[in-house]
Length: 276
Image 1 (cartoon, one colour):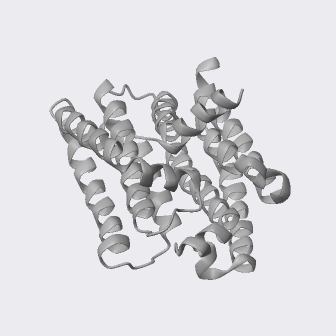
Image 2 (spheres, one colour):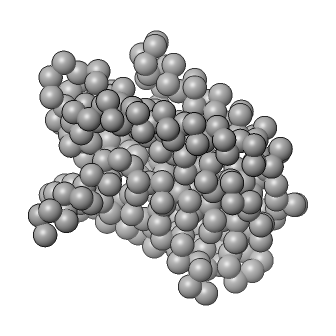
């Protein structure tokens, strides 16, 4: 059991759970929007998510002279050479995928990659903190909806509700992570939303985000035009409730990093749309 748990931890440190969740999420959104996604879009999204997360972990893990406090940063520091080689291989595969992407998706993707580059320049070269968690949440959501927005026909308003809700869910997720990891972030010298604003303000911001999410879900129910859209809102409610439990039960979720295991796993739930 311990060996199996270690394997799952390594897969999580390598952000493969986030990659799988992102691919499932974007295909589920396409199903709800009734858009036929080309296979290259999902594949390119998976590559981009892994490359961005891995580069972020490599920078954070290797920015310290001492051993990092968290498992994922320690892992990326210890195995930085093979991980970097894998990074180069995946980058090459991602560049090859560009030749298969629809032209409109490629243009949208280049714009999005420009903002990703801005993010890394700010934290690595200029070392500026500018609401990192919210910025990542917006980039992640844009990546999930990139295929639908770039090749979809006239989209109804519910799809835009879903986009806003995804930003809110991702923002809540990342702010919760910063709240739970404030002690290790301070210990390692990392800047996060909670180290910048403090715990009381972060919890207040989370309550506001939960409120906005609740209002948007109620609004989306009124505008939903199909069973898939209604059912997707039910899935989003389940995701929101799970994040609410992580917010409300910090003692239990902090043990064994349950908040991360479950917090990342909720982004696989949109795949439940395929059950109906």
